Length: 128
Image 1: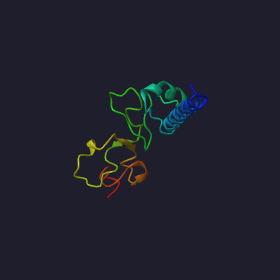
Image 2: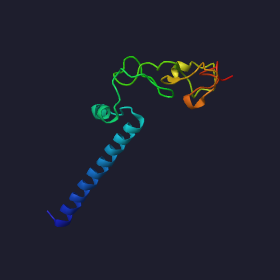
Image 3: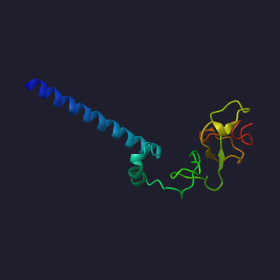
Image 4: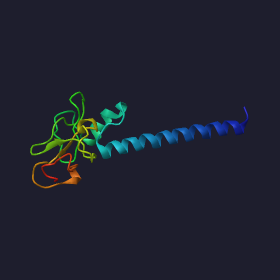
């Protein structure tokens, strides 16, 4: 085999490995930022690195809660918070339970707090 071809193949393999390393590193970084497992292969690593607990933690204001069938993430809001749906919905006639997972918010405290997903549809008691 020609030396130039061998060098070309070697460089190609190195480039593929570098690209894969960058992609995997980006996924791990993103998981650390969002504290949400993106791929099942990284679940155990994510749990160890972020301290995310499997089921026993409650969700704080602005955090989402996971469906009951999920093995990871909080299933309920912490005390004083309420699970709200449809924080991106502006048409209150839509079924808000169909637009994603609920977010925990201090809905009902008399203050409209959009930073936690409250709006006139998701928390009408605070956002009039």
